[in-house]
Amino acid sequence: MTRRRVALAALIIAALLPAAGVFMDVVRNPAMLRQNDDPISAFERRLAPLRAALRSEAVVGYLAPEQVAHRTAHLFTMRYALAPIRVLNKSDLPLVVADGVIDARHLPPQLRVRRDFGQGLLLLEQAPK
Image (cartoon, rainbow, N blue to C red):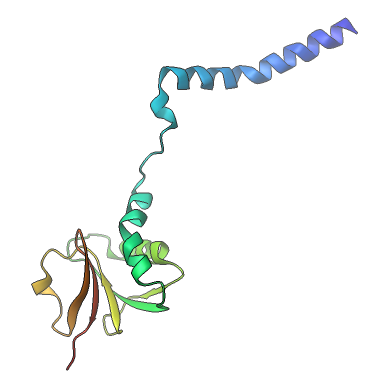
């Protein structure tokens, strides 16, 4: 009976040793518990006002940024951040999302700025003909 208790105690102590190591790491460096600001979370936070403005829309167009090397990856990240709104790689829809716009004067002439969210993020609409 005593052997079983000692074995059980040794097993419990061995199981808790890694937790004690993590606890000591957190005591030494409390910054470990702070949330990291990964790129996707930062991108989602930046698009949050746009997403709120588009909540009644089902589909929007997309105008690729000029200065981004991986435009396809940017499109898919935009789709992820704005879901369930469908983001199509078209600029002829009534509303078009443009990101990475440095100068609004370089936008296609058929589009005008409906709302500027800052940091190059624009919601565009078709200009009246």
